Each structure stands twice: as structure tokens, then as C-alpha cells.
Image 1 (cartoon, helix red, strand yellow):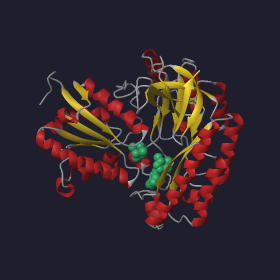
Image 2 (cartoon, helix red, strand yellow; image 1 turned 120 degrees about the horizontal axis):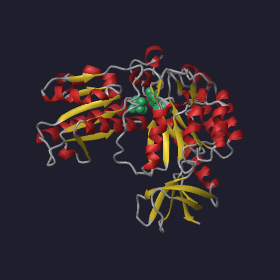
Image 3 (cartoon, protein in one colour; image 1 turned 45 degrees about the vertical axis):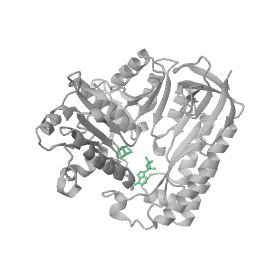
Image 4 (cartoon, protein in one colour; image 1 turned 135 degrees about the horizontal axis):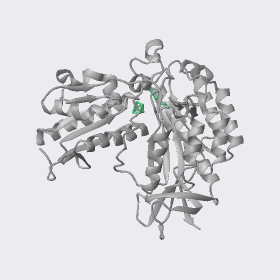
Length: 450
Ligand code: 5AD
Ligand code: SF4
């Protein structure tokens, strides 16, 4: 049952957003505190946890397929425990324990606010009892748990600063799987930042489902810390530490936040600002709480206060009731903004959401796909144009490691969050290197250190 060291081994696999990757580091911390070691080899695992995502049907299908594969692995390792963590655990709850309906056995189902209970749930599972905890919490932020950074590059780390979401975008399952918004004590965040700096990290990304609605009220003094305040404090920790944050909602990106960014050179010039659609009519149906004009006004503010700042986005095609005219408005907004990068998706109806209750999923799948292709093709040319604008410029690149292709090349990111590849020379992970950009594709910049 146990490995050679006598310790049991947990294998963790993460799906979905950065928040989930950050949560897996909490899970690794809870498990190692209880005598487990994290393994990168599933064949030697005593426990396999999948930290799952429910955002689109496709994400859930991938996990279900993977769970089926794991049943075969268990035949070779009979005592192995299989657990589903994260958003699917929260959404599907006891349905994941119905062996006859699911056609496979899952031993543990643990939602995103119940990771402290993992060790006791493990004991139940080891005794053959169904182990489930999907309670959501109004205040769990795991503030006192030091994440175990496994599998990272030692340069760049995530820090989760708030959890949950109460925006109720009509298409989105997150408010149901992640629960109420709650922010983490700034002192614990600053402590974690300092630990990372001491360990040699050079970049942190502050994470939240809705990061810019971060707000902390000190229980004693009642003094408030806003997201802008927090950003300024983290930025002041060390001028060599780069700072990023994700994901921002366009309704919560005031000028004050942009001025805070402008005042700190180490806050990266990149904002991820999901627009979802370029049509005000669709945005209203999506319950996004801003119009096309409001969004463009925020983009104008970013351009005015942070000239050259990269702007990336998320787009959904084929939301309920989306017409060709609405779709053309999305394409025209993309051109007007000239996004540097985008994540693009076909609408996938999620059970229990406002859209599933109120609207018909009436755009045929073929139309959704065709619109998605058009959006992707346009974005490819916009990304290419954005990268071409960087030709001949000098970018400060934080080196993350060797490039995927060869050790003769290193890769890192520019302040704009673009991947930059250049000859290795004597450079090392964690170095800041000034790179002159000499070539590009739509996905990557190439250059030479100067
Ligand atoms: N269908 C398709 N895409 C979705 N997203 C969120 N919910 C859905 C859904 N039901 C996209 C949004 C969001 C990103 C994380 O995923 O664009 O910003
Ligand atoms: Fe997926 Fe959303 Fe859950 Fe992240 S919060 S894992 S994107 S469903």
C-alpha cells in the first residue's frame, strides 16, 4: 500500500482555471501535512485526485473519460483511492458516488471549500465508506495554509486572494460551484508574497474569480483595503518582483486601479478583461452589467492611463438569442479594441444557470462553430498585428526556463505577457533579460538579448 519511504503517495491532476491550479497547491499542502508525499507518477499513487472544472460540458466530459481510464489503473493497484475535487464535485455532488448510474466507482467527492477535511475523508474512503463534503463556506480562504508549489518553474507563482463569485453571469456555473465572494486578510497575502521572494520567485499573479472586487475590512480597526490598495502594497514589497492579476470584471476596473498600475513599474502592463460579446443586447441577456459602450470606455481609459498596455479577453459565440448582427458586433468590437490575445469558446449550456432557466439554447451547434471559427481567425490576425508592432522593440523578459523545442533557446514573458524566445547564452531562469525582438508568429516573439 505505501511507497518505499513508508509514506502514502498522492497524485494530483488539475483541470480548468488558474484558481484550480492554485487550489491544488493547497490540497498538496494539506496532504503533505498529513504524511503524504506528492508523486508525479500515477502508477505509484495510493490516491489519485482530479481537481475538476465544470465551466463547459466538454471540460466535464474530459474528466469523466479520465476517471474511466483510472478504473483500469486501479485494477493493477487494488487499494487505490480515486477522488473528484473542485467544481464538478460541487456541481454533481452525490451523483458522482452512484456507482450503478456512473458505471464506475469514485471514492471521494470534495468541493472547493472542504479541502481541510481531506485527511479525515481519506480515512472514511480507506474503510470503504463514501466520503463526501461539498459544503460551501462564507469565509474559507485557506489564508493560513502555505501552498506546496509542486511542478512549477520556481520563478512565477499564483497567490489566491479572494474566492467565489456573486456576479451571476447568465451562462456561468461558477457562482454555484464556488459560492459567495470572500477576500483574504492582506497580512497573510503579504506574508506569502515575502516567502515567495525569499525563495527566489520573481513573479506573482494575484488570483480571484473576480479579483478586482477584492475588499478586506479589518475586524478591529474597520479600515478597508481595496484591490488597488493591496496591489500597491504587494508592488512595494520588492521592485524586482513582477505582479500580475486575473481575472478582472469590466464593471470593477476604476481609474484608480489603472493609476495604481501606472505608479508601479513592476505591475505588468497587461490586463485580462473578458468582454464575452460585442453586442449590448447580448451583454444584457448575459447579465454582464455593462454595455458595448461601457466596455469601450474602459478600454479608452486603459489606453489613456497606461499607454501600450496589453489587453486580452474572453469571448463566447452562440449565446442564447445571438443573431448574425450581434455576432458582427463582436467581430467589430474585436477590431476596434485590437485585442492582443483572446480565449474563445462556443456557448455551452450549464444546468442550473440563469440562462438554462430563462432562455432557449437556440443557436444551432453548426452556427456556433462557424461563428467561433470567424472569431478565432480574426483574433489570429489581431495577435499577429500585435506581435508585429513589437518588432525591433526591446522587451524586458523574465526568463522561465528553456524553450519547449531546445535547450539552445530560453523562454520567458514580456511585461505584456507575450512569450518571448531567444538564444540561451549564459542566462538562467529568474533573470530579467533585455531582448530585442527580431521576429514573430501570431503566438510567439523571437529575439536576441542585447
Ligand atoms: N459556455 C462557454 N463559455 C463559458 N465561459 C464561462 N461559462 C461558459 C459557458 N457556459 C467562458 C467565459 C469565461 C471563461 C472563463 O469561460 O468566456 O470568461
Ligand atoms: Fe472551471 Fe470556473 Fe471552476 Fe475554474 S472556477 S475550475 S473555470 S468552473
